Length: 272
Image (cartoon, rainbow, N blue to C red; front, side):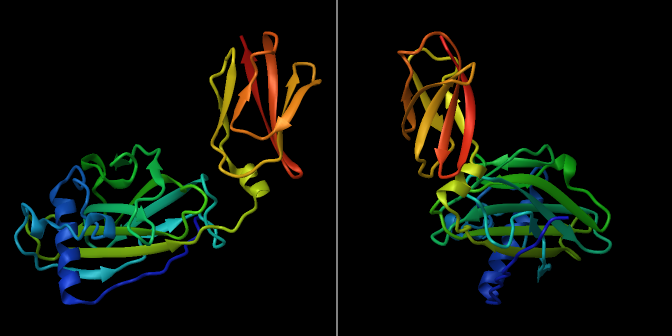
């Protein structure tokens, strides 16, 4: 079961409430998903359909703070580069149509992290936003969407998720529709380089190669790298670097070990 950690921040200003209302009306007015940029977050520069080409008349909906966002990110915080599961659940009795948009930002409004890996939703803005699909916006009293979020690099700090959803009774107008809003703040975990090595998605390329290997996916510090041949014998060892000269090796299969403290990861490669 997914753990929830939230800090719901609702500004009760009538002006901001109206902004959020227009935001989510735009979301559902586009049945195949929000066009993006309508979460009301800092990166959206306050943009709403009220300041552009509006697509809906002034609604009579109400705004409600709702615990919509849940994740499997632990209370200790996210591990940089690690992938997590995010679930959005919008619920209201008697409602049959649902739409949403979510984004993740740092305290300055910069987009942080990457959404991915779901056939249930539309991933937009190169993985910086998620919204619903026209084929997946119906439900009976509630609707959930599940997708992945990869945490940003080390040093990004606390990340804030902003979600807005419209729960609509599908009667052809805005009467009886509700707007749901939620925010979730997640701290960056305090981890050592050794811990980071455990969680990193390390790849080496090109593979096969004839001259040089590049290590990707690890942003921490390591002690050294070591290359072993197919029989397990050490061929050479050197201080850690993201590039490795292997031009002098004979053709064959080798193993590259990256070591940090008492922790190590190993990747195989082929020398042409």
